[in-house]
Image 1 (cartoon, rainbow, N blue to C red):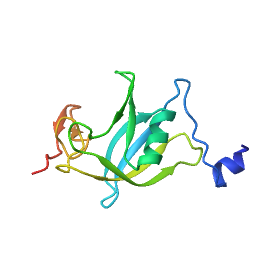
Image 2 (cartoon, rainbow, N blue to C red):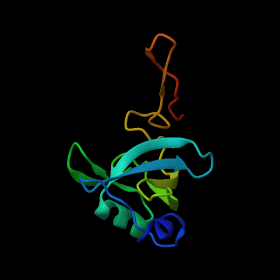
Image 3 (tube, one colour):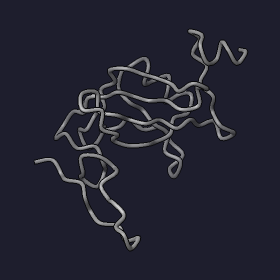
Length: 128
């Protein structure tokens, strides 16, 4: 696929890195809040497309996982987007379960903010 087709064409050609992975950002379908960043391999992306439920690849466990399989925080995929050079996936999702997304209980994985001294403070909230 040439550069013009890659950037402006209708062909889906995700660019996986040398480890066979592609970054995947999950964003709330309604609020547009960024929920998390994870990675997908080819199988995770294919399962996500087929099931409309977000599947990711765990780099630490070296295995495929369905987001929310144990927590109930299933990410129901409403739309799949890719960036201009197709090396990042963006999932627009609705979250099942208690509305949380992060495995430590917060609404999203970006629950800490750096203060003026460089220390992290908890700025996120946990769902009720």
